[in-house]
Image (cartoon, rainbow, N blue to C red; front, side, top):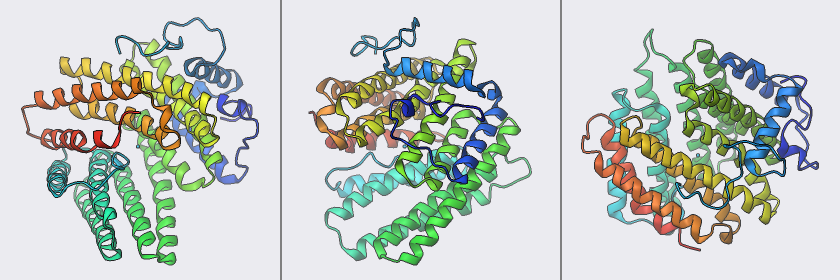
Length: 414
């Protein structure tokens, strides 16, 4: 990434008050990110000219005033007629005991699939986080110090059991084992931070934060190594880089500028792969990378309370999220997409709307909310069609059923 101008990212160029973190840590993170991207075949992204192309491409996609002719990058006019731990889905009133019981069944089914090697570690951790959020919502409504501490401790213990399970999977041919172990350690550290917050133990909180930072650094290093062997995907590398940024860059402005820079490169690479007809540049992957490039801009506009600009970014990101969902629905019907992949697409769109709603509920129009509800009905149909409950399918269906049961109540119409 050496040689890139300070305004490599349109996010920074449009916000001159932002400053890149000058500490050596940020240099290390950017260097690690660039080395990682090069190892995945993205070495051509280095240099000012390519950096400017990244900015140009993302700006056009996100709705800038640049006049660039492109069928794909044309700014969507309204809703097209054709069309993270997961934590954060539950934010409303306490859920019922029956729902909590069903969430425990999801945790059990997901754990069984994980231990048998049928569910990736990241998916399993997402399911555990979702179940924990349901239980946390249940106790927080009638919160007592004892019940919240007990729930936090139970979550730590469950994640430690996951660590023990993945430890038993180690063997000479275990691809990505070290990276997945570090990922579980990250989740354990986050759970310890929550426990420390409940107990008020400052020493515990400091130790947990240090564990989180070290585990995030380990995760990035292990994924980098895997990428050199050709067994780490670009989304996995992106995930590792962003977790490392979250662990090491505490200032929101620093973190958003870093995330924006990395996601710009990932978007351009994915778009280039799509133009080349490569499978890793599939149309839904291209739109997904565009969403992640827009997300830090949307987040900054929300933090800056620039509501009109935030609305524009939300409309663009939501339209892309809708296209991802519709593309994966088509793939699902052809048998080339999983229920889990379709669910992830819906969750992404839901989280975008929740991010905006937390700042200003009026940002999420009735049209956007209606589109999300329509997609949820499609997701329901997909889960009903999944009649074979072997492997991880049972857990995936249960996950969808719990989303349908809990999330709509927490996303009322504007």
